[in-house]
Image 1 (tube, helix red, strand yellow):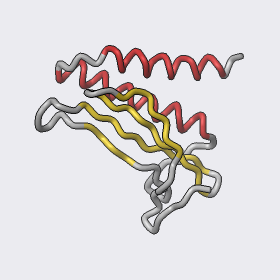
Image 2 (cartoon, rainbow, N blue to C red):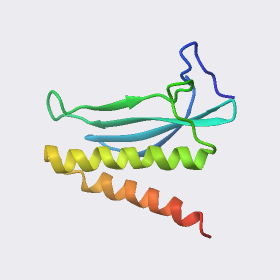
Image 3 (tube, helix red, strand yellow):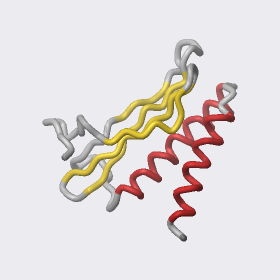
Length: 117
């Protein structure tokens, strides 16, 4: 069972690490509350100086957070956000993110193909 704090944020989500090495971290977090699924993420490029950083969000619920009808949909949206983050870092900031981008694309494509099997 997922635990939701007073701010409507899940404090014990399911966590899936898509990629982690010395420079990059891509992890997604999924949780359900009252029949609705939400996601969070931890996306990071480390060792690249001030302003490069990353983005972190926890699965949240309530009137300001969009929910999803099932875990697969919430997961797909979280993976798309992770992919967009690393594509921007690669294209705009000049980081060599090809490995992590390819891995996230494989994860997204693989799960989409499973829906048709």
